[in-house]
Length: 55
Image (cartoon, rainbow, N blue to C red):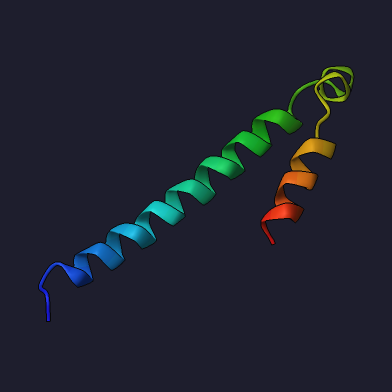
């Protein structure tokens, strides 16, 4: 067994957690914008369509 394999798994898991945290932070900041600005940039419509395509 390669000794680096467990470290790769942990690193990949940590990367996924970081990505999720970054996505949540971005979503919170977008939701804090005034409704008119969110509508102009297409939030949350574009975001929801992007997430649905990932599934």
